[in-house]
Length: 94
Image 1 (cartoon, rainbow, N blue to C red):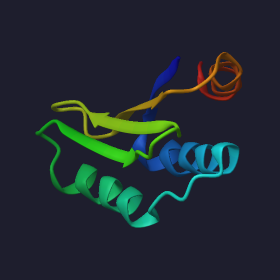
Image 2: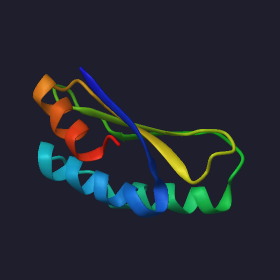
Image 3: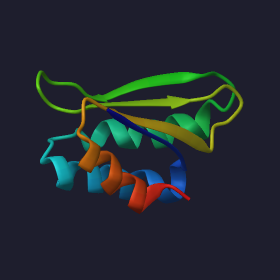
Image 4: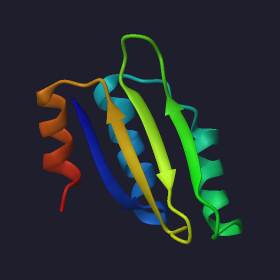
């Protein structure tokens, strides 16, 4: 299963990443998150892809900033259970 949502980089990214880290007990590099925020401010034209977390037998966290959409980011959490999808749907899907 997977969860996918689009969020605002400036106001929602750090909150969602904090919840992902807490919920799955993942060690996600905060510097990478800071780089994503910085990239959104300096390059607002090009599409960007980020691998936030990948480790065998753990959830994979991917992110994509679409071309000409620097203020939002797609977050994908892959390799998770139905209950995990429900948890994040309840919290983040509008």
